[in-house]
Length: 191
Image 1: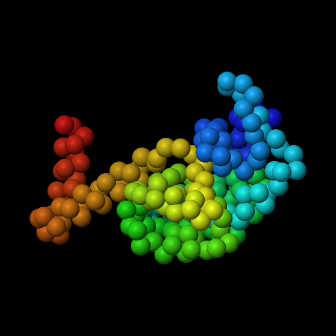
Image 2: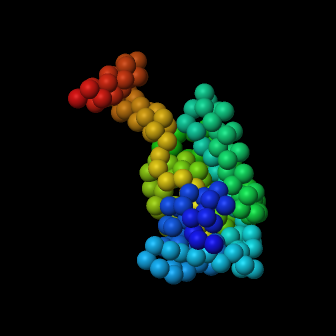
């Protein structure tokens, strides 16, 4: 089976599967047989245990996105089920991606049974320094799996507003911080 077919059968984006192949982290044996062809061996070595215990992590920035959070968890769970992998922990939280003190993310990352952390988008794990988290996981024989490359624009804008509000609050005081942040965003859009 070629890599694209395998990726679609597993519910993974083909570009993500190709990245796993390049990085040597594809959970099944595969080999390049041509300049643009990669064949996946889905024999006995493709057992669900090959990837270890999965930890699914979903996050949204605000309470009004709670239904998005539930859909994220459902999509992650569906992917793991279709791929036949064993899920050992599911964590979902409402918190800013800029906040490094997220208890559920910390709990997931600290769980020794979780050998693979799965997120829908890289920015769900955090807005900054996700490469450091990925490197730390790798150093301990674990890994991060991102199902979809790219970012969620809505949350990126919301996080930008939070950062601008925080900076404006420090500069101008709490009362006018939100208005000044909104004005700064409007000026950036039109300028």
